[in-house]
Image 1 (tube, rainbow, N blue to C red):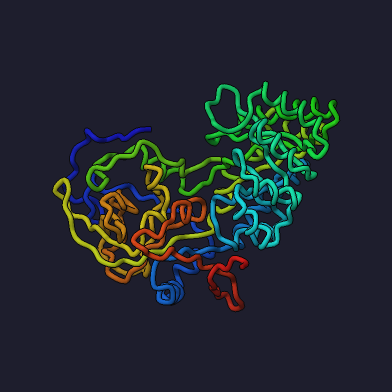
Image 2: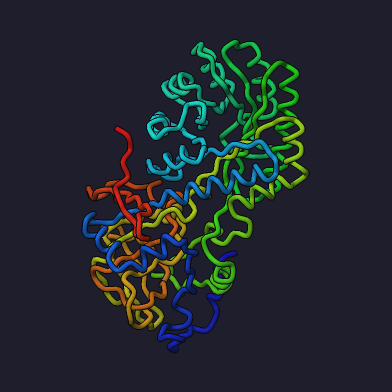
Amino acid sequence: MGLTGADAPAGAEPGPGGLSEGTVAAPLPAYRDRWEEHILSDPQLLGDIAFAIGGPFHLMYPARVVDNIRAFQRVFTDSRTPGTVYYGKKANKAACVARACATAGAGIDVSSTGELTVALGQGIRGADLLVTGPEKSDELHWLAARHGCLIAVDSIGELKRLAALDIPMNVLLRMLPAASASRFGMSAEELDQAVSEAADYPTISLQGFSFHLSGYDPEPRAEMAGQLIDRCRAARTLGHPAGIISIGGGFGVDYIPAADWSAFRQQETRRWFHSGKAFESYYPYSFPEPGPAMLAAILRRDDLAGRLRRTETTLAIEPGRALLDRAGSTVFRVQGGKTRHEHGQPYRLLTVDGSSLSLSEQWFDSEYLPDPVLWPDGPGTPTATVVGAATCLESDMLSWRRIPLPRAAVTGDLLIYPNTAGYQMDSNESPFHELPLPPKVVLSEAPGGRYRWALDQPCQ
């Protein structure tokens, strides 16, 4: 849905709570977990971490990653479906997430030698790594083969390069969805050729097929999975093991209650945004069947679970964002602010000690919409607020919309952007202006209902 309400009355008269109707965005409070409630209510913890770090930082709670993995695993168990969970590592670089995958018995989907070695260093076995990506480097091929990883092959040329290594290896063949303009995967004709050629390579063991789809609809995923089951059965007649299909990721996350999301989209107007900024699209922040529920819907469609059981085919999935749901937040310190006016109404323009490079949605020409939380809590008058970065770029805004903060923020306050672990934290981070990258602070429960913190430490 595009912007609406642009022709509505100006609404310059003061609205409820002193905010101006028509110029302040509808609130979008995010769901909170118990750990988030605890740190927000603790009178010292966030302030102490901010003092120690001396700049913006990311909070990580890996115990939630373990819970999310096990929720997907329960769907496989409850449906009696053979299944494997691979974490899409590109969604977050934190070492503690890879360690959580090892703890929960999940694999990891990697696309570089760096990601592969980090996963190994956090306890993921080579056999539990799925190596994806187009025309992978010779070094990545060699390392993956040496560690017994499962390699998703993107083209016939890549298959030939792998065979030339003369190292025994397990592979999947990636399928290009019909009528897709994607640059990834092989057409039906190319897949047929690859299956035939793989039989001639003694070191290649064809374990099955894979695909990736854009969007979040369960139905086409189930339909394509059914097609790949048929391909596995045909490949078996040629002597290939062909017992795995991977349907990729794209499992939705439910960030915001449906009623709040609906109100925002129905009432949205450019009058809400600093300088009249407009965005063409947003992530669907309210999702009716998120994560594991979406997997269950896929398995129910056309009795996919039954077909997988009857054909003894394992379903692999590669969620990224969904395994990081409510597993992290991003914290910025308010450095200062000023009052500006638009449509005859005042609002605060804050500058925080970081950049939207650490809140990556802006770099996809969109806005991260779950409302930030102002800390510490305290009395005050609701205040329309936009949030800018500590850089020289006019476009470097963390929040373009006028958010209804519960009070006016002052220098030294913290703004906590919730649920940022999935793709927001570090997908586009850069030491612009030679600013240090925000560190990741790992939280864990301690005796007495407390939380301890430590810096995320990749293996060296």
